[in-house]
Image (cartoon, rainbow, N blue to C red; front, side, top):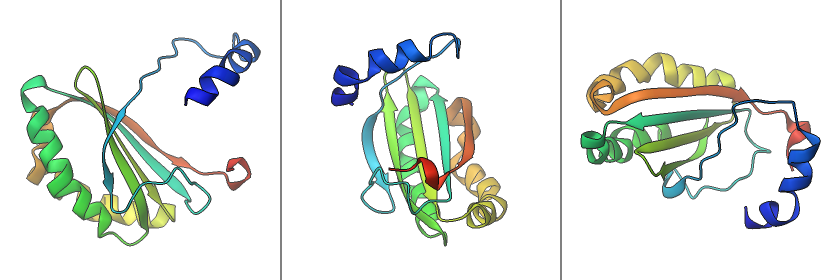
Length: 143
């Protein structure tokens, strides 16, 4: 990050002027890994799931606990889940990134577990807003 900001950011930003609007940037501090030690390597992943959560202030401790005790074990035990990371930013914002070896395996996890786990984790009580998506990784873009 520091290297990118020092060496490339301004040049890249200037070349993209006018191509986006309302951009926001937040830095999330690593809280813990999902499944195994996280590596920012995308060459073995087919899809990446990103969830950006704004958590109610009085529910932060509960949200963090169920992420570690409910969601992480469920993801880690799912075939095709490679690794992930859970991060926190100021203002009760959290980011959950999970990497999957195929869209089909991620799809099975969603259909079979997400609703049941959400009830167990009391997600609706914890989360004020959630945004995210499943992004297909294009191997031509990986380094």
